[in-house]
Amino acid sequence: MMLGSQTLQSAARSREENFDDAPIQAARSPIPRDACLKATAILTIVFVYLVPAPSKAEILESQVLVVYNSAAAGATDLKDAYLAAHPGIPAANVLDLNSATLDRAEVTHAQFATLIRNPIRNYLLSMAGPAPQQIVSIVLIRPFPHRVLDMNQSTVGDFPSNAGPRFNAGNANYASVDSELVLLWHDLNTGEADGTMDSLADNIIDNPYHTSAAPIESFSRANITTPKSYTNRGNVAWVLGGNGATQLTPGDMYLVTRIDGPTQDDAIAGLHRAQNLRINKALVRIILDEYNTSSGQDLDNHRLFAINCPFFAGNDYEETAALLIADGWNVRYDNTADFIEAHEEPNPIIAYASYGENHSQNGLGQNPPGNGTYMIGFDYPPGAIFNTIESFNARAFNGLDTRFNQGQVAAFISAGGTFGVGHVWEPFSFSIPDNEFLFVNFLVNGLSWGEAAYTSLPGLSWQYLVVGDPLARATIVNDPGLPKGDLNGDGSADGLDIAVFIDLVLNGVTGYHTAYPALDPIARGDFTGDYRVDLDDLPGFLNTLLAP
Image (cartoon, rainbow, N blue to C red):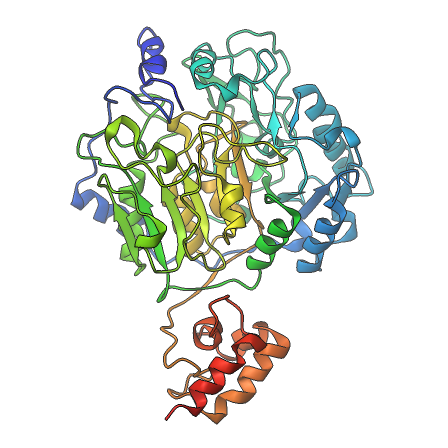
């Protein structure tokens, strides 16, 4: 992300299929881009994408494999917390890798294969564990390695000026652990000899689930262990090949997410925020913050290939805003030089997307406050999502720090966020996750967090980390919560609300959601602003009842 746009472009011009992307952080010269969609085209997208969706098949607890490392401090306790949140996960769906070697941030490809991939494969093939076809999501429990080193230049992904030439040469095989596990049954590094696209680990693989609005269960998993075929496109990417059982489909993927945070307490708090999730459309706002796009240099619509690019889904921020506004969400979309700071936004933020520390790139925008801490100070209700255009925004787990002072998913979780997607190494801007599918599939189309996250990712065997409970699914209500204290929704706060308040304090929100499915107990009964209804709210509740 400190790399000039010419680095990727100049090498591509000699190829039959040009790719015109620039690495994210330092596009120092004008970047070719498609014109923004005109209003009529955006309206067409809104009509097509927001048609009423059929009821969604949920990912079941029995379809989750929980993987942890008991040799790492705190892992067993966090695993137990996850199982307590999901008591329907069978004991056979829990795998302990129990390896002191894995108590680290980074592994080699060989360590990944022998210590992570192969033990999971073997367990799924054994009689002791669930069958490979039964599992839909793999949940990694903190602490767990998150970065796979490049086989030829181990940390090249940390240095954009070096990563660009490696990508141009079809020989960048650094990745995230999580993204490699998505293709569990692929021997991705077979054939790697430091040559151009000589293994599937080199560069990026097209994600067949990208841009979908369908639940993952609508795709057959019968062929998940069958070897797949790919086509080398332009010596820089692997696109889908084969047919039938040998062509990769979403049913051949595992949705790999992790329960993580800067500390154990942060990870547990984020997990708890994802449970019984009810998002109140009437009270939250979504931020989509670009820099000044009038010069046509926006970062959210880059391509790898000039024609028929499988990684390209459109002008992301503009299209996302149009889709969400059409569904009635309160969206603050900004494409000026101003960077939206926490003190400028009093509303609770349910989804946050910005250029982050790249907002000041090329002099097109204000420099964010702090050094990668710009996300601190916003009010994040349970269910809040983070996705920024920064190369290393998922680097700072397992004791690693950031690069170039960029914002972090980890810091967002610590600040009260619930979900995030990010990158552990340099990803280049053509591959950034698309809010159009991340936000819209989760908040509008009813997909689970794991599903929504993976529909937003252009590629596989790449740099992505998906943080948060994959089973989390939001119930959307539209409740202004007025008058405050009116817990039974009869239009007044009075003695009839006392029993409801007591039940909320003693038994939590689950019963309330059943009894009052259109109401938000937090909007109506949380007087302290901590997104809970408990005894701390009693003084405010009593004052409301006693008010003249």
